[in-house]
Length: 263
Image 1 (cartoon, helix red, strand yellow):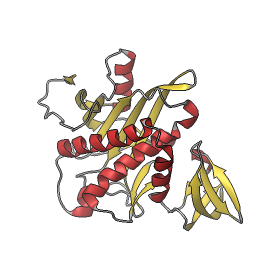
Image 2 (image 1 turned 90 degrees about the horizontal axis):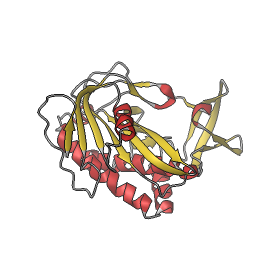
Image 3 (image 1 turned 30 degrees about the vertical axis):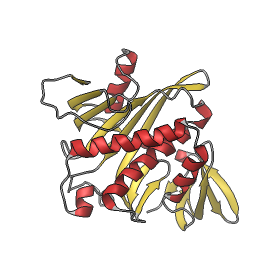
Image 4 (image 1 turned 30 degrees about the horizontal axis):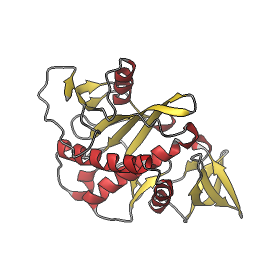
C-alpha cells in the first residue's frame, strides 16, 4: 500500500517482510520523516510497520538535538513505525540495539565483514572514524509499556561531498553508485529480522551481538567528561543504555550527554 502526499511517480519498495514496509508513504520532500510518521500515528493512519521515506529532508533530527544533513536524492532517509507493546519502557534501549544491529547487518552485505564497520554508542554507524549514518528512535509510552516507536534512519549512500571530513558514504567507500529503492527494501528486511528477534525475547543474543560491533569496545581511548579529558575503555552498555567505561581502575556509567568521544 503506497500513499503519496504529492503527485510523483514512485517506484514501490518490495521488501520480503511480514509487515515492515507493507505500507509506504513516499514524499518528495518533508521536514522530517519522524515528524510525518508521528502525524500519521496521531491520525490513526499508520499500520504496524508503516514506512515514511523521502528524497529530501529539510529539518532532519539527530541525537543531542543535532540536525541531520543529507544531499537530496542521494541518500536514504526514512522512518519505520512499530508497535512494540511487548517491550517495557525501562527496556527500550533493547529496541535501539536491535535497530543498530539491523543496520550493521545490512551494511555487512554491502561492505563485507570489515572490522572498521561499527556501531558508535548509542546508535551511530561508523566506518573507521567516519560517520555513515545515524538512528533516532522516538517512543510513545502507554503506562509502563511502549505503545508506538518511530525509528528514524539516515544513511549516506551516493553522496560524495560533505561539509565535514568525518562523514562517509557507501559510494565514497566503494566507488560505485546504488539503487536507493533496492537498498531500502533490503534494509527493511534486516530491520524486521532483528525486530522479530527482539519480540521473541532473544535479549541476551541482542546484547551480545551489540557489544561485538561496538565502536572502541575494549580499546583505551580519550573521552571528555565534565570538561576534562580522560582515558577510558568501553567494557559494556548496561540495561538502561548507559555506557560502561573503565577508567582509573573503576567502572563509570554515562548517559548520552555525560561523555563525549574525542576522535
